[in-house]
Length: 189
Image 1 (cartoon, rainbow, N blue to C red):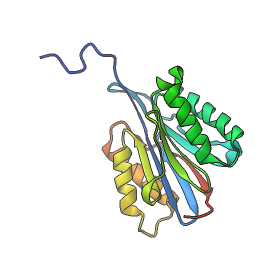
Image 2: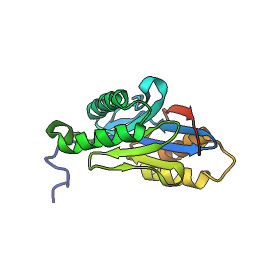
Image 3: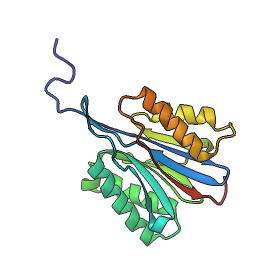
Image 4: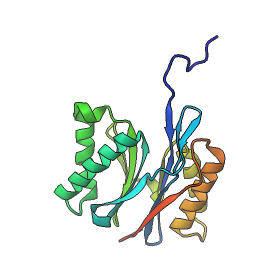
């Protein structure tokens, strides 16, 4: 019996991104691993960054070139709708669903500003996390479970992100411990 992936190009697996909003801070962190099939092709990719002159932070999981395209499009929407992250994300997601080119992009994003955090996907999702915690990517469920277990602890948002991503890296072979963390002070929790 042939291997289920025989004849198929190797699948790209990339990353774990986690967002935690707690006690006046929102933190997004991600690991740096990019894998092609069973091979790690890069261990220090930067998948978390600042947008809108530092007022928005975001992280992506999926194809890197696709994510950069989405970051550029989101940056343009944020310029068009300054200070309105939700509106910019809804407008980006509309384009993502209807534009022939964008529809083919394979990535997901977590973005946050001082007021709101959102998950964006090509299937039209613009979701606000329940309880201020959300994760995406290959190890997203591991990081999400760890962060939810830690959210009632005395740890601050950054410590929760670091610990939860560390746990995900111990479990998910597509996640490593090379972390990039960005944080913002928030208006409310």
